[in-house]
Image 1: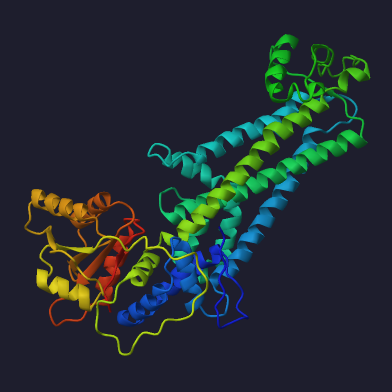
Image 2: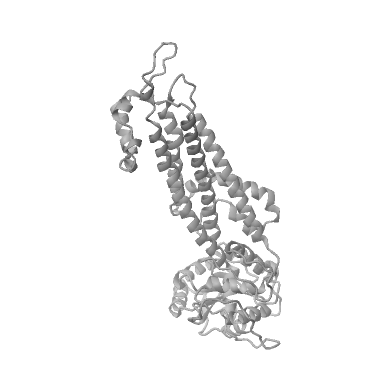
Length: 497
């Protein structure tokens, strides 16, 4: 369901679409990291107290309606870009379809229009393209990834998207640029780009068929086209009749006149014998093919493309929702909104704000379970870990932190991960040394931790500096970029600074 929220104290602010929010919220949160963590925690927790809802999307968008400014962000500009690209591919499809129909149905009176050629150009070619499209819809299995990526680059919408990136890429954040590039993967951006490009390509395919069918109807109605069939292959009239019977099966009862008869097939065969003086048969023998050709274009060209276009629209809406919710910064925001008040660092009492209406109040979906902690390679003591989580991150660790990595054996690591998995916490804080580069062993442990926790729990990587030394921004950035390679939407780095 598309939800629009309006900031209660700013009646002039236009409502934002889901796509706009999916673009603007992560960008805003990225810039918001310059604010003190304690201030972000107080602000988001105050807003979150009155945004108790079963619908996480509604909560995030209602929060955004409170904090966002009145000026349109990058999302509004990209909406116009999407519309422009849609218009471009549609016009290209119309022109291409019309031109191909004119070429396939060209008739100068000397020879009939060859149905074999027209069918191959206007129908059979689309069978191939449709098969390639269906291949793209399959899951990105290891054996298909390279093939799907190669086919994706042949997508006509990729050309329009590449042109847009070339014209405006300099002002687009890196994460946004990837939304218009074909790539195969499970991340939300990959799914969004896949369905967006498929949506554009099906718009072009629908326009192609509309242009081709409209042109064919125009030529048939206003000119005296004569149709026949001819091929150098050793195909008998009986073989041709069998083929047309199979092709016509979907409509043979609804439109029997669009099924070529044996008499039509036998009487409309011709041979191009130049300078032979051979004469064609009676004109009426060459007029019965056009219903078959038009119905084939409708059934095998236009109809499947409309179905895939509708399917891609549904999946694109779902991918847009995931684009917003499956973002590490948004996950951190949701955790801050759901956090209990466990620190005493507030400078003044928190004042709840009047918020937009959201769905009826229910227990928070993310409030079940307690927070747990893992300490990687003895990065911090148990006592300091609990104190750091409470005073710096605003997270109350409800059980003893578990050791992981370092001098621990593989059996010890498995036991720690198993223990955390049994607790089923809503959050797990993993303490690491900020100045040590992320190791593959740690990344493997995070993957295994996610497997044991499921997809809903948050994993917070907390880099700890050396004692009495401030965190280095370069070290934190290294941790963020490395953790992001795991493509886990509910895994993020938080320093509390």
